[in-house]
Figure 1 (tube, helix red, strand yellow):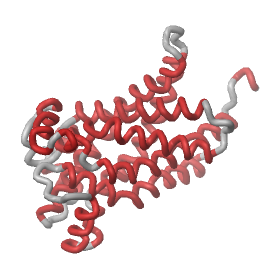
Figure 2 (cartoon, rainbow, N blue to C red; figure 1 turned 30 degrees about the vertical axis):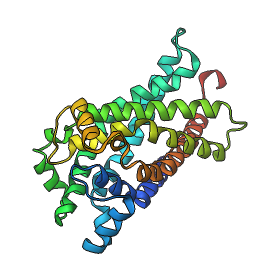
Figure 3 (cartoon, rainbow, N blue to C red; figure 1 turned 180 degrees about the vertical axis):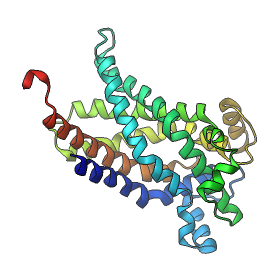
Figure 4 (cartoon, one colour; figure 1 turned 135 degrees about the horizontal axis):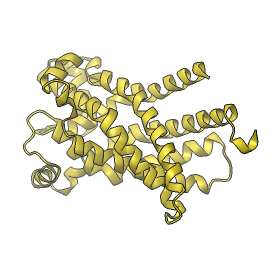
Length: 274
């Protein structure tokens, strides 16, 4: 089982590495003072000016946090889901949504905030033409404590992300005709799409709070400043590249998750089945 789990974790890294340029472009579009019109312009400029490796700036902390994030997310989700489902007053359709909300908050505090802070700083540094190493990024934010900059915004984003994603996925999965991985993949894609557009303003606010040279502090102040500078549409800046990444990576993660949980149930069946 250990060998299988290792392979599953490696599978989760593949979509992140392949789609990371879209994350780079999304973050660039959300940074204060962004001068690019679209994700294609972002990628073309950085590849032409700094070389193809430039669009992978910030990948290291994302990869490091990805496996931990997936583990924390699904462990927390399953644990919270069992407890919420035991509450008679909670309607069944709300169980995955509430469990996802809690799981998102847990992963934000433990894993996502520091990896997102470092990624944002490393992406921003590319605009000055100087790559920033992880250790240098940690020093720039003021040490380990500074890695939790913008934690409230990350908690809000991750809680909303997981609530919407698990909620939509749970509703759709209950209506699918079989346990086939194909259905898991399809439901994951739909859940990812809904999640992107429902939570995009929180993602924009999070990036601006963690970026160097932020004009305002506090989620509401950043949101109002963004609307003042770019209009309401500014709160959805970077939605297209984020959609390109999360639709497929989310579908793969849900598919892998179901396969892992199925394997665990075979190894450790419920007591009444022994």
